[in-house]
Amino acid sequence: MKSVKIFLFSVIFLSIGSICFSNTSDLLLKAENHIASGNFDTAIEILNTIQFPEGKNEEDTINYVKAKIRIAQIASITKDFSSAQAACRKALNADPQNSEAKELLNSIKRQQSPKYVLFFTDSIRFFPSLLKGAFMTLLLVIVTMGVSPIGGLFIALGRISRFAPVSIICWFIIWFFRGTPLLLQLFFIYYGLPALGITLSPLCAALIGLGVNYSAYLAEIIRAGILSIESGQMEAAKALGMTYSQAMKRIIIPQTYKRLIPPVGNEFIALIKDTALVSTISMVELMRSADRLFNTYFNVNVLILAAVMYLLFTTVFTFIFENLEKRVGIYEKR
Amino acid sequence: MKKDNNILLTLKGITKYFGTHKALDNINLDVKKGEKVVIVGPSGSGKSTLLRAVNLLEKVEKGHIFFEKKEVGYRFKKGKRLLDSPKNISFLRSEIGMVFQHFNLFPHMTALQNVIEAPVTVKKMPKEKAVKIAEEVLAKVGLSDKKDSHPAKLSGGQKQRVAIARALAMEPKLMLFDEPTSALDPELVGEVFNTIKALAEEGMTMIIVTHQMGFAREIADRVIFMENGIFVEQGTPEEFFSSAQKNERISGFISSIL
Ligand SMILES: Nc1ncnc2c1ncn2[C@@H]1O[C@H](COP(=O)(O)OP(=O)(O)OP(=O)(O)O)[C@@H](O)[C@H]1O
Ligand SMILES: [Mg+2]
Figure 1 (tube, each protein chain N blue to C red):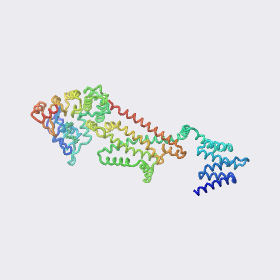
Figure 2 (tube, rainbow over the protein chains, first blue to last red; figure 1 turned 180 degrees about the vertical axis):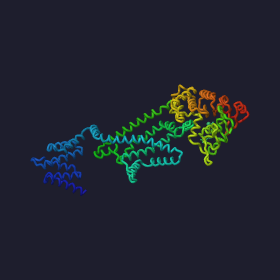
Figure 3 (tube, rainbow over the protein chains, first blue to last red; figure 1 turned 135 degrees about the vertical axis):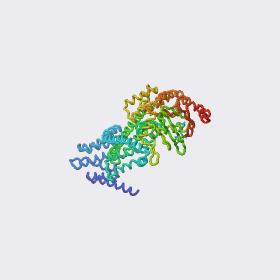
Figure 4 (cartoon, helix red, strand yellow; figure 1 turned 90 degrees about the vertical axis):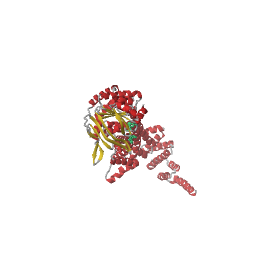
């Protein structure tokens, strides 16, 4: 308590002293010190003592403008937008060309406009770079969607194979890639492989990581789909003289499509969100773009906009999968 | 080997185990070209297993299969019994048609597609030719108007007739029927029997497993009673049904299913 009293006393003493004896530069310095230690009110008091110089003293004019800008900045942080604007105007009266004051005034005006206008103007500002990121996300999603069902099918067929070595290898692939976090796999591919002399671009590493991981996941789904087809189908195909691979290709696998679309669709929705993980291996996609903008502007609207874009993707793909399911299964309806 | 040139299929000493259970016990059978053999017997007696052994859907531990005088199905390597190459097995199966109790039509294909599938995929027949044959066999089973329907849209009897057409499109030398009417509602049994009868009249060689004694009597050249993996009794329908009255097990079986 004692130290606080001493501190307050010295602050008051110092400010009175500064009003009486300092020139404008000293005053500014003092005010900065107060700002640095968080005494905004005292700082503003000091800054307000800096008057517009009567004569044409250039240094005093500059200091006056600086003081007003400082006042405006403090006021805008404390959401006192009218004082902030007034201070800006005073600064601009003294120095109409001052760009800092102009920008500040604009930003204060922007902050005063209604929330939805603000969101709109922010959106327009952030949209281009987020859109670029979104395109990259879409690319990752579509390539993985194209590659992983094929990879998954081969791993599933290998897993079902009666040739033990193939079956064991495929079991291992599934076991490993489903049993470790995707993030870890990505790190290993991007940061770990260079140690073995394989250096990949972020895009390449991301596509390999997502592709293999999702192949392993889909393999189990596809395997279950194949095993769910009645054994009578394979028997009928064999009885007609088809080989195992002909029967798989012509009879069994086509019948799994309808059953596979819902669970595979689910995995693909998860994939859309999982692509955000590749931002950790310096791949600039939607999440990374949003993260960058957010760290620059500390503006929550960036995150809202990114969320809207992700939702747009998941909604569109959900719709596509639902339609596909209806169309593919048509033969089963009576 | 028999000297009879008319023999299509010979089974010699066929023995099949499921674990320790002997499903087929030293089965011997000659089937002449054009002959209709009907196999009857209680559930679990090994009738399906026998049919499946003939087209190698079931691998047997002992015995030999001769089709058109040639031994088929197995190779012997260093005293070990191995299934023949997939190509040879595939070829044998393409010459033997099989009709299943539960039809096993391909649900993702129309009736016509079901029928042309094997000729195109297995025999590499040009599609136009396969379609021509398919239309003929579908007409034969009376389903020309259903050729573009998927199985889900067909009745049980129609499904089984498509399944018969599907087998016929491969122009098989032998037809195996495993309880072709057991899954059908009684009123649909007749249409399938008539189809099989028409086929029989054309001279097709057949082995038919059925529980329908009336049909057996009507179509069979020979009836075989099977139990516990053994042929207990066989003969012409007349011989079989008269001796059946003397054989307690057979008469018991027949009265149980009537
Ligand atoms: N895949 C299998 N694994 C183990 N046992 C089997 C298998 N298939 C058949 N069996 C057994 O072999 C025996 C003969 O079966 P099979 O299906 O040939 O009889 P079935 O005469 O056709 O009978 P049903 O009239 O019921 O069709 C039965 O005891 C059955 O339980
Ligand atoms: Mg059976």
